[in-house]
Length: 634
Ligand code: ACM
Image 1 (tube, helix red, strand yellow):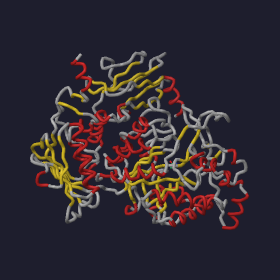
Image 2: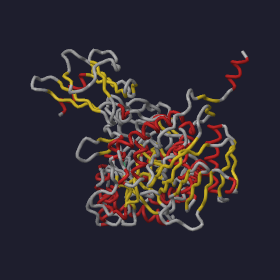
Image 3: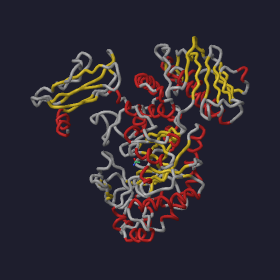
Image 4: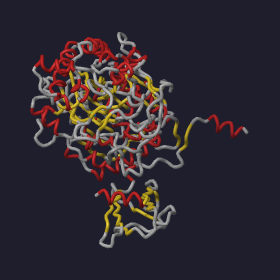
């Protein structure tokens, strides 16, 4: 009994073997790194010194907490570098190579020294040091029997781009303040420094605007449904609208401060004039469409028809550019947003604005006549120009999705290029600053392997494709490329574990594209690093997608009309085992070596990937009916 009790009270996890001396696996890859002989063994009494600066102290405290939690060692902070085994040093004479975010990390058997020009650099040096420690360093509990040491190394490192962003959509599904903080922590560990907070869309207005209380009393709530978002049956008049939520202004301030301590800027997005159903449902007078007073915040039922050459809205989810009530409304919104978010930009959306209701509106026709506008894009351009004046009047710069280029917007507006890279190239050549965020490479809402394996989304994007992205596209004005961003839209993301699943590992790729020199990129070594970091995530209990272990299926018909399936893996060194007999294959089953002819009457192709005798992938179950459909589609 005593033994059981003492086990129960021992709040620790015990590694069954001593941690292997792992290879160096840093994401993002540092600019220069040279490993030396020997290791720094963490002593049981550790002293971390840092200068008095509060921002530097934060990095020192983070390191102290991580080391003391997982090792159980005594870790003290001091201002005295002489007695410290880990020193965080702010350069008194700036090292120009390092810039604002760079650092130098030196590990010898005697001590660890991180030097930087600015506190951000020390923070990034600490993130690198954590990645040099055994993976158990990220444990939230004490871990025993680990050889806590760091390889001796000299690193000089600084980012390629200043904008290393990830967007999280909290409108389609709401994520709590604590989940958002978690997200920021997870980003910052990989030197991602820009959190784009998509706060407003048809499905919910998520930020308290004190002068417009209905935006959150009405606009933050819809009805809960699960299944495939976008295809939900219409919500009944009596169904409760209690699903959703919003951030109070105090919550926002707390998150912004939390992010700032981790050197993460927060970019708020108020997506207008399209995607505005939550605003219109709250204040129907912002519409030009009769009947808007009956509109409700969207819960996932169909409201757009994307099938034609020009998409149309089935209900008018826009703010009306010809409605003079819209501009004082936006003035109020941006007054409060500007006060809450210290970052220099406000993102005003501008994407996917359906114009079919504007085409029918007498007010819009009158506006066009008055202003000499001849196209609906120009009407949006008129709107964006007025919005930019409001945003600028609050001391902020405007950023929008690449559609805002179409109606003519002043070069002072920055553009986020999402419909491929064309918008970014065009915008930079017109003198706009650009952030590159193309669907084809960095859309984190896309499926990560075959559609049979993932929650249904209309496109797939494997991590190797993300990693292949080069943001300085041909023809772009490189000087105006601020950086790169991955976007996580959350129509199909119902909970925070799924946020993590969708974010990782593709955001490792975003991090390395944005931080590391292009010449350092190498898929083979990067995919190995991903696997090392999966092991860290297992310790940290962060979910990730194992989709890169899933097979790729390519199918065609041979001359005899039989289905022939080719299989491939995204990473090297894996074997694929398969079955057509409905049983679950393992490494005693046939190994894939050449395209497979589907036997008569087979109903399922099951495959699994192994490394040696270890299964690494999930069971992929491909119905033969699905293969037939794919051949027909070609
Ligand atoms: C977007 O993906 N609609 C910007």
